[in-house]
Length: 295
Image (tube, rainbow, N blue to C red):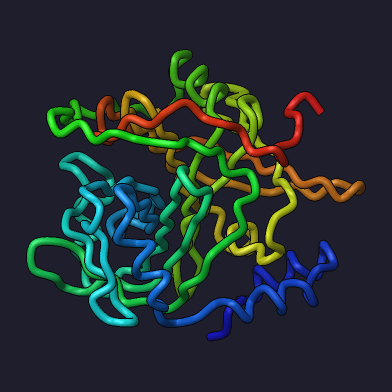
């Protein structure tokens, strides 16, 4: 298939950006160029999104390691030294050969991000992904965090599971400036990023989240996927303590007459893991293009 499927095309046409999307789509390839391979090997965090073959729930999961734990072994394949931590919702799924996955690498130090979508392949001692799509996105809405330290003694605690959000989890979401979203379609999966000043995403009830869809790269991969399949997985990270809050459920986007878009997410299950990520980042410098959440 091409860069875009019917869902993405439908959203592009509705918003009137098909021509711009065609231009952006020319940057999508099937191979990792040397600059992309070098970027990967500098990163300590990779986010993977997929649908669990057992039950079909879509999740987004953080994978971490020393820089170099993700590397390009061929122009079309990356190897990841370690899989998800025990208890992660995708721990078993990523061992399935041919699972469609989306990945995103986000570097807060440089406000760069790269996405690779493809299929899992057997790999001794870790995870390998064969690329179908490789591309970078602009730095819009990325918060800059100038430095991090790796804490080797930090270990994931027992995950706390539930079917709705606690008051503390709702506060955590309301204070977030970044989250990741995984979506799927008939022929693949995608992992993307959403960012803004705290308050840009809100937990409006124990089962509902809402955020405004800010203008972006016009590809509409996430919204296009949701148009055909509402399943989605969200990942919120505490960039200081390493906490990971993973949510799975369904998301739908409302298109306003004024062109504004709002996405609502209904929680089906939550997995909250203290100390899941052994990284402690410096305080954020918010992107200068972040809209004011109050407006």
